[in-house]
Amino acid sequence: MQVPAWASVAQSLRHGTMVVVIDRPTAGPFAEQNLSIARGATVAVDEINASGGLTDGTRIRLQEQDLDGLATGALETRLRADAAAVLILPCDTNSQLPLAAAAARFGMLTLAPCDPDPKAGGRYANYWPVGTSATDEGDALADYLQSFAEKNVFVVNSPGVSDVALQTQAFESAAAHRGIHIVGRASVATSTTNFSSVVEAIRGAQPSPNILFTAIPPPSVNRLAAAVHSAGIIVQVLGGSALDTPSALAGDDSGLVNAIVASYGFARKTAQSRRFVADYEAHFHTRPVGSFPGLGYEAIRLIQAAGKAGRSPQPAAMAHALSKGIKLEGVALAERTYQGAVDHNVVGPISVEKVIPGGFYPLVAVTASGTPVPPPPPTCEQELRNEARMSTEQRVSLERKGIPTTGCG
Image (cartoon, rainbow, N blue to C red):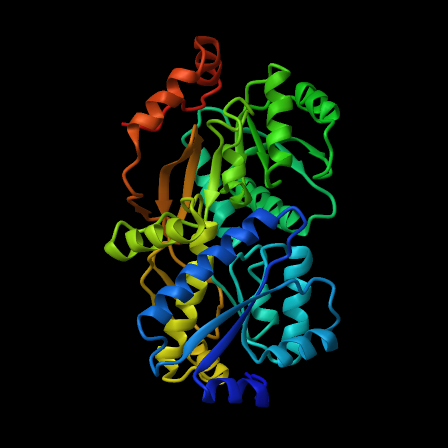
């Protein structure tokens, strides 16, 4: 496993600074997710530096860049000029995986907050995910559907958005292995505002679907759900982790209320987790919503853990430590284990939650082996408000289709 020994990195480290470049495209379907990741990373850097830095006192300098579209040579030149020791990739497979491939050619240590392609670590030796894989998320969603009396799923994909395609493929594979029926499919562009063809396809599907799965991110998924809801079609919306963002909560009547969503995890209920939330609020004047701020926070903590395990902030030492395996106690997300060179994918709890007015309601978290673990205690007051918003007709229709209408005991 080779990591470039750039003179600029060595010089920066000698002066007590580790430069971490985070790629944050400001446009595209995952701009909101990448903003949340960058904010979470900022909080982690501030906390670590305020506590004395890394093990040897080295401070982290986080540098945001927009690296989309750079050729391999231009990317290497930019990162070398920045004295970058680590590159944090964006959550957008259309740019994430090409960047990972380019960085791999010159051995750059890269962290991927999102893991839509669980095979990427096998292709790129210095590529390490932070969140759970799309395969694990698909398994968790399909397992949750086992509690439904009926399991007839209509799938909506989006052409040209690789992240959506990979998550859709992972869910369909998990559904097939569990006897869950895919009764119809449709594709829409994330920019579309006309969903009439999707609505008609859902109406015409046989048997009638009671579940609508899509990995399309907000705000497109909001428009899709609203169109289906306005057409009088009662289905349980099932979404990928891209929905675990504030935009999914926009507009209580959008059709996403009660949507079931895969999540990268819930924050721990610890003093350090409460500090993360307080520091995030103080810095950005808003609470961290969804799991993407936690992904950014935990990406920086992984750098800290790798530096400690490798007894050095040098990229080669951190890469070697990761290849030997690391167990990371979670703060903004749950605990995770890195098994080392054999498999770069994270082993840890996979979470499922529900959209309710004003927030996300934790439903279940399970380990990769399928063992349930208790999620944080939900806010029953919010859940009861959510139930009150449903009309009797909606509740009866949902229950007849085997869709649970409450999650608060």
